[in-house]
Image 1 (spheres, rainbow, N blue to C red):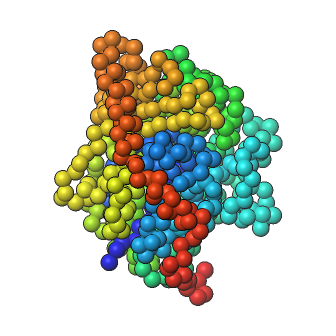
Image 2 (image 1 turned 30 degrees about the vertical axis):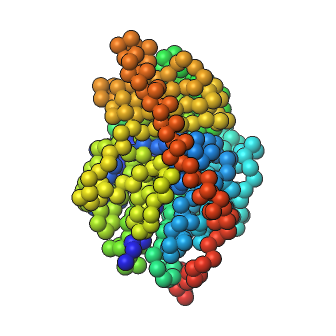
Image 3 (image 1 turned 90 degrees about the vertical axis):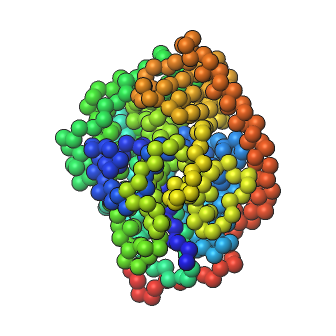
Length: 494
């Protein structure tokens, strides 16, 4: 019997946010339980430092330069969820996927979409999701930077404020409870694939007061000091943009006080604790259904958040705070309490899920399955990890930024500049010593730049079948699968 798969993806969650992974400042009892009962990847890296590019890569098994999604508003051409649907899975999305178009089917039988928390900006496309509708039906205005700007202390809050509406309307609670609702009511036959997209801890950082109180007096990690003069011009330009624009409601400061930095971090970590509660309730509902022994649960995030490290806000850079994310897998045949230290890539979860569903992994996928880590099969370790970002409306001073991670050596390359970054993470985990111009490391720099050229060249050969797959799957992107019997729901359920 094939396992159900529950794929929980948060938005903008750093690696240092699960207590069981060694971070005592966190309060995450449910994620700790998941880690104890499963396998945690200690070096999981994204393929792009922005929401939709990371997710399009994850759900296609290809890099952005292959699938064409470098920016949030660029259309997706392929999604492996359709393969699960065609194989007999009931495929359901609750919460955020960040697809384009926003409510395209992309292989899902059902989509119950809740997108970004702060999507009231006049420059963003008009769209009403389930969360908007919930506020409308209660006769309330959805909180966002539009509403918060009316407060006289808006600039002092720094994008970190307390949730004042009913707790059920908080975006993470709302999404988590919708996922529970679906699990409670669904009685369809066959296995299900449930993707739960929790909108937090993406800013604005908006925990309830109860969650925030848990972090009162706790020691939180210090901010890695700003060093703009040591950064490539493209990153200096990104930082300047953040200092002049309250992106997603975050008022970014050039030289925040320790108290100001702590404010943002406490609110952010409290958001994660709220997410932890929802994860626990989702797991409890899976157990109440009697499905826990036959359900694989994956918890991860699309990218991290600088939270002021190196003087940056949010993402769009290649610092560890942004590119290093948590990933925990638990369920039948998953080793308990295991920790994997190898470098792996977020999009590797795609072929892994296909293998769990007894499906063949397309030969053109650039991702490689993590399944060997859960068995006695020899593991073909990923020699290098890559990430890339381009054509962005915020990172405008470079046309293409590429990260290569080779063991503990990280290189960040800008296609239109002689500047770059080179770090030895083993001796400099906070990335405070840029070795790019150090003559002693010139050979390493040249070798890694050459590796980027080889990687992109080999990618062109590897992905020759991707376009054909997009053409064959085009209908599934826009129309829900029709070949399965419709799901059923319990009469009289909540």
